[in-house]
Image (cartoon, rainbow, N blue to C red; front, side, top):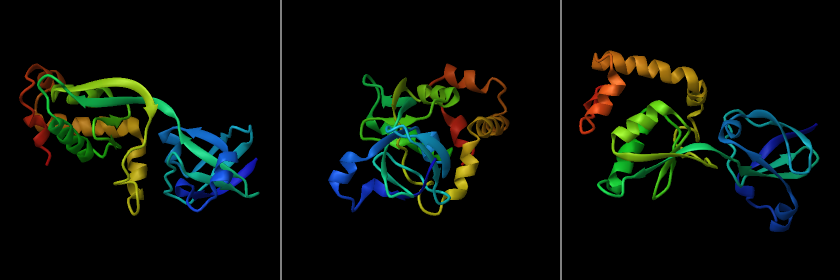
Length: 201
C-alpha cells in the first residue's frame, strides 16, 4: 500500500508533463471530503490516503505519494439533483432563492450560472418543486461551493456528515414550527405559499 499525505490543489507549480503521466483516481464527493480513505488508482496501485484533517479534495487536485509519485484526482460522476428554473413561468431569480434556502440548511451546493446541484434528497426535491423549480436526477461530477467547508469551517463537516440523521431532526423541527401534521403535502397543495419556510429565520 502506497501512503499519501500531501495534496497539491489543482497541481499548482507542477510541470504539465508530470501531470500528463500521473495515474488518475476518480473519487465521489463523499470520499473527497474525508481526510482518510483507501483507494486504487488507474495504475492499479493500492493507496492509503491520510491528509491533514479538514482537507477537501477537488477534481484537478494532485495527491503526492511517499515515493514521490503523483496521482491526479478527478471528480467521479455520482447521483445528483440538478435544479433549473422553469422555462415557462420561472426566472433565474428562482435559482437564487433556492440557493438561499438550501444554504440555510447547510446543504452542500454546486452553483453554476444555469443550475444548482445537490446530493439526492427527496425532501429537498419536494420543497424545490413546490418553489416552481425543475428538479432532475442525473449522474454528474459534484463540486460544491467552498463556503462552509473551506478554511475554518471544518466543524461543519462532522455535523453535515450523518446525512441520514441530520435531515430527520431538521424535519421534526420544522413540523413543530408549522403545527401542521401534513406539513409536506400541505406545502404541495398550495404552491404559491411558502411561508412555512420563513418560520425559522
